[in-house]
Length: 82
Image (tube, rainbow, N blue to C red; front, side):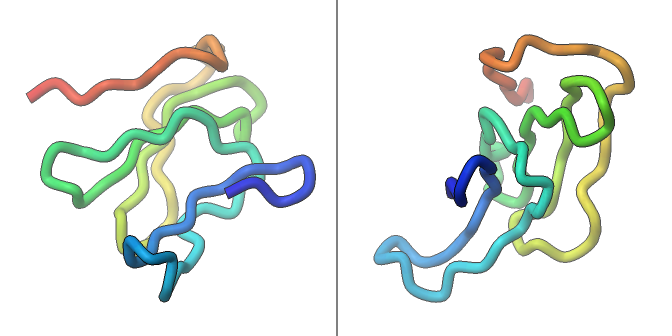
């Protein structure tokens, strides 16, 4: 969801009800659901460089940084490999 100049991920029902923010970085790009719908991965410059992060779909717990200093392309599309 875009708010001003930032973007985060909100999760709720298909009709938009009950939505709650599961990220608060203000710089979330290219979120992708895991195949089982339990997690999201996304790209963010929250740590200073564009890196890959993961968060649970229920928003419990802090997002986990998966790469450090990767400086990914902001337009890259993360993908889950089973």
